[in-house]
Length: 140
Picture (tube, rainbow, N blue to C red):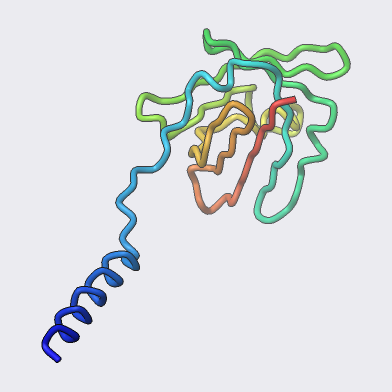
């Protein structure tokens, strides 16, 4: 009977360790060079729950390793800048002021919090939770 108690205690301990909810794995580090390959398009732009992705239909984006960004639509280029901060937590985009005359590109100007950056997808959210903005680029 003692061996059954001992075996039960070991099995219970093993199960508790395996079923632990603690996830101490670090968050994946975004690849800061990923945006510099290929061209990108906006596949999601939402603000306060409103899907405004269609405002970016026809735009193609490139992000150069020197920090320059270009948005192209119908052969017309619009220059901007981009960067990922040193701690890889923010993706900064600047296509000019956020005003009616600069829509939709001005809507992208922000310090975006990085959700993930891979060679095929860039997922961001506004660093101001009150705005409830989300932005996703996918590689063409």
